[in-house]
Image 1 (tube, rainbow, N blue to C red):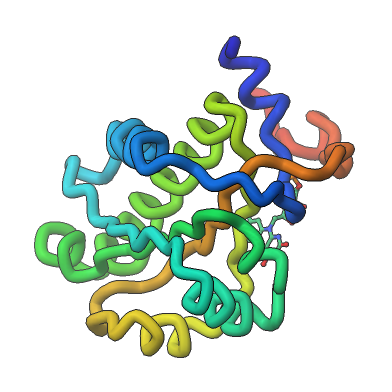
Image 2 (image 1 turned 180 degrees about the vertical axis):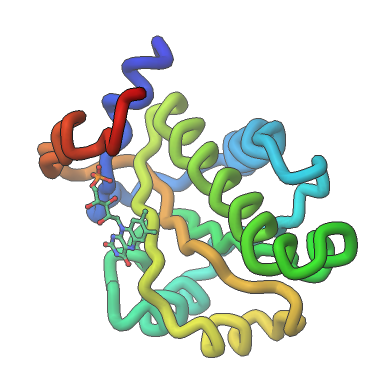
Length: 172
Ligand SMILES: Cc1cc2nc3c(=O)[nH]c(=O)nc-3n(C[C@H](O)[C@H](O)[C@H](O)COP(=O)(O)O)c2cc1C
C-alpha cells in the first residue's frame, strides 16, 4: 500500500470479522512497530498480546463495557515503562518521554496493521488500576492504550477534522 493510502485508510473500526490473525502477522506488526522512535532510544514501552477469549472479555469490562473489544481476534495492551525512562531523564522521562514512547509505538502499530489489511481502534477509556491488576503488572508500568485489532466488518466514514486553519496557530 502507498504510504498516503495507509494514512487515509486507517479509521477507528469497532466491528471485526471472526477471522483470526496468524502469529506470524502479529509478530510482524510488533517487529515493525519496534522500529518507531523513542527518547534516547530507551524504548520505554512494553506490550501484552491477548488472544484469550475470557481475558478479552475482562478487558472490555475494564474499558467501561466497550464490548466490541472482546470481539477482536487480538487485543494489544501497550504500557509505558516509567522507571526505564526516569532512570536517565528523571521527572521528564517519567511524565513525558515514557508516555510518548508507548504512544508512538501504538500509532505505528495502527498504521502497520492498516498496511496489512487489518483495522483497529485506539481505546484510551479504561480503569488503569483494574487493568494493572488483571495482568498483575508492576507499579512502574503504566497502561497507555488498549488496541483491538482484526479484519474490519464495517464500512466507515472518517469523522470530520479541524480545518488546517484551525490547526495552525501561527505561520511566522
Ligand atoms: C487517546 C485516544 C483515546 C481513544 N479512546 C477511545 C475509546 O475509549 N473508545 C473508542 O471507541 N474510541 C476511542 N478512540 C478513537 C477515537 O474516537 C477516534 O480516533 C476519533 O473519533 C477519530 O476517528 P478515526 O480514528 O476513525 O479517524 C480514542 C482515540 C485516541 C487517540
